[in-house]
Amino acid sequence: MNYRKLETGLAWFSLVGAFIHFALETLYHFEFGQFLPLLIVDYIAVALLVYAAVLSLRVKPSSASGMLAGAWGFAACLAYIAFFVFLQQYLQGQGPLFMVVVLGAALFAAFVAFLISLRLVRATMKSNHRL
Image (cartoon, rainbow, N blue to C red):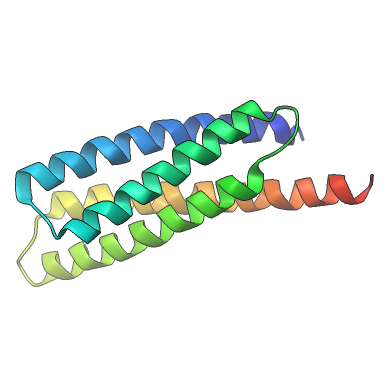
């Protein structure tokens, strides 16, 4: 398997995901408002994804899979919390189903990306060990 090619794809996916996260989070903030620390932590996730992705694309043919794993792990944890907060609100009749669906998709994508990044870290560790 060509792990470098997979990492490059994940890096580009990270940039797209970061852009979508930034745009939707900013739109949500202006439309509904939220406690500022909750917005800032999402912007930290966006910054980590962008930094890891750009680093990964720049260090070719080397790897920045560990940075991608850290960024996606952080993003996955945020998605997990957000999904279940909105699910609880929906189940109590206080929130829209649309947000649960959007956050469910984000949670799924973040966990898949996190698992892929962990696989890349493992592959990088194995290839470095053989040197």
